Amino acid sequence: MDVGELVAVGRTSEVYAYGNDSVVKVPRPDVPEHWAHDEAQFTRAARTCGVPAPEVVDVIELDGRPAIVFERIDGPSMWERMLAHPADIDQLAVQVAAVHREIHAAGIPSGVPDLIERMCMKIGEARTLGDDAKDEACTIARALPRGAALLHGDLHPGNILLSPNGPVVIDWFDATIGHPIADVVRSSILIRPNADAADLPHLPDAEPGFLEHVHSSYVRQFDELVADTADSLSQWEAVVAVSRISERSDDDAGLLEFWDARNAPRSSSELALVATQFAPSGD
Image 1 (cartoon, one colour):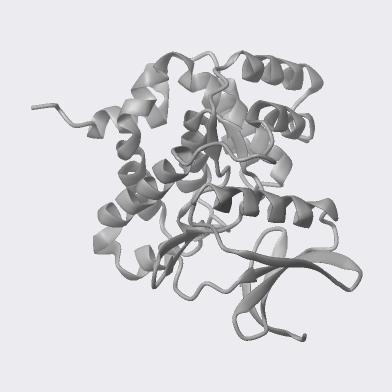
Image 2 (cartoon, rainbow, N blue to C red; image 1 turned 30 degrees about the vertical axis):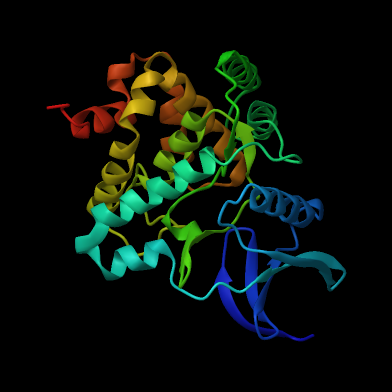
């Protein structure tokens, strides 16, 4: 079957039309070959729990390298919908949070790795972090509450497609089993503007103020979870941030700011400040 037109471009792969009702996700040449098999496994695992993930049709070889064939999901991404309808940001952010909570409540599938162990593996590959800091980060991570929920690991509005049958979550390569606050912290870091106000590759074409609105609208949906993990929030932000450095992010300076604040009181955490600011009064 011939590969068709380019559908999407990501940091580590390109997605092409494939046949009448499928797409094929082709990793870039520098991506380890096992990544395609891992993502296919994690996506299938999520589907076994009833999570709205695309069907994995097959893992094939293209030019001697594995690539994943997924069912084709017709519809814009949540991010595209936000850009097209900025007046609906609050409502759409509520939908993002609802999808996230659905994932966390779905159960624990087999074949998905442990969050802390995978996080420590990434921390070990963080190029701008010294060896002593890497050791400290893994020590902090292993002392945090383990949790037992399915985590997506990369959830943001660009990874939610709005099909005619409802939202579908794509890009499950970073799925793990762990504490939901780690997933919310990760999404918070992905959605908020870069420290230097540069464009976010995964959420393009947005001004910092637009991103700040999306971020606050999303975070305020998790005020109770943030409050419940208040004592460890700065540590969660620190280790989640430095584990992202291994992903060749363009915002190492901003990520390291979280690390520098690892021992700060909960009141200085931006995530906590936003959640507290918008939390319902209870009246």
